[in-house]
Length: 236
Image (cartoon, rainbow, N blue to C red; front, side):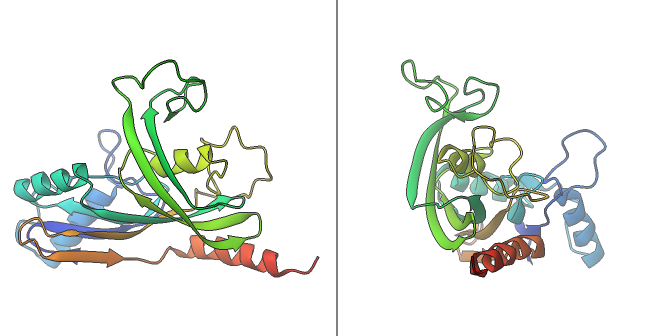
């Protein structure tokens, strides 16, 4: 979607890793970006891409890579300071209401899954040292049949943060495979979790100029939304 000497912004498709999870894996967003830059004949096209954040394999949407060490340092600092606007759209089970979710995520909530300290089991004291604060602002956008289209704005960006927070609210994402074991409602089947990184906005790491990117969800997300709209409109 955008490329200059300092950074690259892409729309990552669902089903693709952001970066390699094991040696030799070349079917990643980072590798495809390098291939595209080479095809354009850009200067510094073979320089390493700096990873400053990731999207899950099955999450679609906007990502930024740094192309210089300085850009990576500045972007990483902006992510740490929460100075980058990140907006996601998701289709979540049930009727979702507006909420601010502020928890401390741990690697094992008590049953082997990532989760919020004190959610699965009653908290015994303060969160452990390794716990990381995670804040998600949830806003319903559209009521669907058995689900809700929601907007999630990130204050922080922890691994699986939106998936965990929506599940802990009682509204796991449609297509969720991991954080859904506690959900007892009717499950809507989907080939992947319906989660899309829709907006990314930040100051350019070299010039300070404001950059803002927005991308509509891909066709499978839109098809799920339309199907649930159609079901909602069907007379009973």
